[in-house]
Length: 430
Image (cartoon, rainbow, N blue to C red; front, side):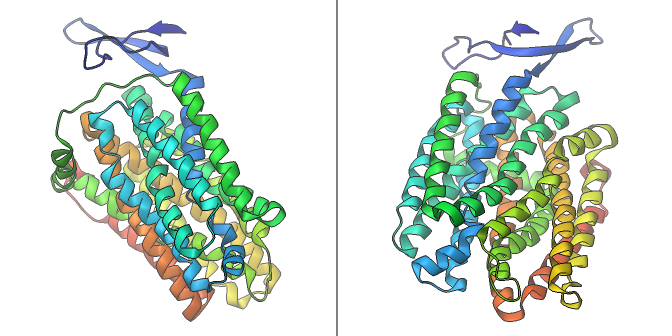
């Protein structure tokens, strides 16, 4: 392991940024006999990025297993409390759209630290909310500021060499996805034993600690564009128009996210009712099943590097469709058998969704290295708009048609994602 300064890594003032400890993997000779050092971030730095992504994005999902408890304590209907995860996801999509592109214009390290501070404030506000309106405002703010995760992932892609970018991004995404899934396990347990307010306080403490570690361990990043903020946002539409690959990835991942959001935003309410009558801890425990899928993220990145991300997206979307379709058999089974099917299906669709996401990120990050924050923003805006729409539709379908309505929606959206991936396009858009 050696300490290497990249001569291009310097601030606007011309001063070099702090040294970054990197692995030198190999030296390749170009055709003109110049050498290029292929560099990789150290394992400790990758772990730091994965932890930061995990704790920040987990803030979006703490409320989901607690919705039954929240509805009872605040005194609102199941339909009204469904707006909590909806606003959180919409806030995240809005934050990605308006804030994530700044990573190309400013030092990503500074942006991450500012968002971390604001996220702590938002979580504390949620902890002390006394009404649904205050909780909804806090939920929107949590969504906006939790987008620090979407500054961390492009940072990992920037630090990694192209030949191993899928693996590095996959490792960081493992942390992010584990945060999504295990957040439900933790929040369900904490809410049932110590109260839902305690969960938000603990979340704020966790983000504070990781922010301190990032301040000490993450290097500075050189901006890749000098566009004005208005032009930066305008370029998002230009990127979307210019790259069919990006449009395809955002649409397919958005469809998958719709079913994902519908499932997780209604699971706690469904289990709280007949015939299960289960508490938030049980609902959160299903996150353990989903975590199996998240652990496969590095493998998905490796497969994308080796066999091409297009193949991996088809496999992931297909697995998601099969898993949700199987859940439609629930009405034919006993309550105990329904829970087993629910657990197995959760492993399957989470694995499918996360595998497809890693492959889509590998595709998107390779389009234009100088616009990774903006490309990432477009992908995740599509994803979280789908997730927010799924949360809203899922709550409405659960109230009107029961759990079959939710799983039916998820099956249809997964099949739509698979159709997008099989849609014939020119070779340069594959």
